[in-house]
Image (cartoon, rainbow, N blue to C red; front, side, top):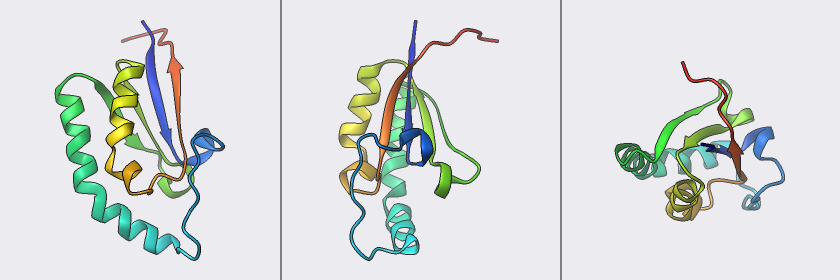
Length: 107
């Protein structure tokens, strides 16, 4: 059964679901906004994980350049999360992408 992967920012999300950055916003200002919204974002992630909808989530080593990703049990779960994600609602996710993923080996 396929899983679904969301990519936040970075090259894997480039060109998908793009929002424009506010004019003149510095990377530091954006990071301050992200950190202010992070507790609500994390609480939502924890809620979806506790329900078994979110399987994994994390940032890449250079999250500013490469973004983050999450693995979901279903497309509907990922879409439900994104509709009310505090990062998304506050315009902090400049681009994101949802892709179907077919796992081929589970240890």
